Length: 299
Ligand code: HMG
Ligand code: MG
Image (cartoon, rainbow, N blue to C red; front, side, top):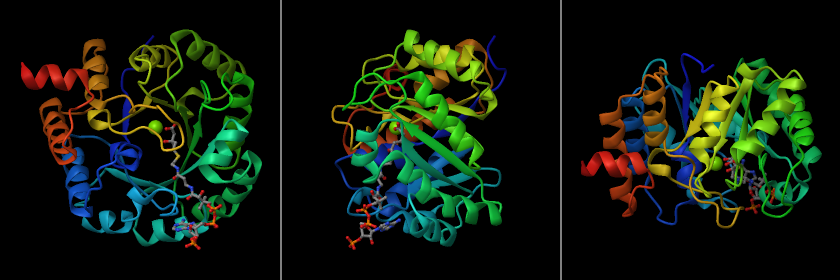
């Protein structure tokens, strides 16, 4: 029982580039975003208005938003950890913001320098101001299938925090397997718990990392449970600065190839996506992490 249509959320320009060692200019980043929007990707996470002390790679997000050529219908989104980030996001005319929390206290401390409940409190004014101006808010949860500091995570904890984010006004919650330790088994157990707790599946997105080579298997399970929003990153860019050893997000090209095989609609043009993939790999002077792109570009 797969969904007929999937919405791909391209996170490469943010989640990808925030963890790449090579620093790119705002022009290189905006060129990437424009190449991605040209492919037909409906949502592009374009930047992050966080502390430059914490994530220096995202310090020029305002300039990136200024340079992009906005395509009608494409949502250009950004992360906002606090009200200051929201102010910058509003100035940049973002289509949607994202707030982010972790499901373990240790990861919350490392990523946001606060406890889980403190971060959720910090988001309250952000959510209130976003609601007042009809700015949609996405919620992220990190480490839903394992934490680099605390190991296994109880599905019940993920379920409670998902509920809390939805109740606080997020239109969807992206479940992050930040360190990629999830398997088809643990993914099924997590989703069983969420659905038993009546979390609406249409408000869930899946955000897989391929560290252990499990991302596509986990995404197939998520699709079977009816999840129709999948986060992906062109060329498999990125990782996570607070999760040592985490390799990139699942590659957009690999997920597009998977969806093509399943006959699921996604609206993305593979040749144009390969062009974006090749562009960013050249700029970063490194090989693409996408197996499908490697195969298709050398075929
Ligand atoms: P803090 O150090 O506790 O707070 O950071 P602070 O208020 O003392 O701020 C520190 C400095 O940052 C100050 O500057 C502030 O002015 C400045 P200083 O006085 O030291 O020169 N500052 C800001 N600057 C620009 N924009 C802002 C902003 N806020 C403060 N919005 C804070 C707390 C939340 C700010 C910090 O911890 C932070 O920015 N964290 C963000 C970390 C981050 O972006 N992580 C990556 C995203 S999450 C992720 O990747 C996972 C996900 O992809 C899912 C998955 O992969 O699984 C979503
Ligand atoms: Mg990620």
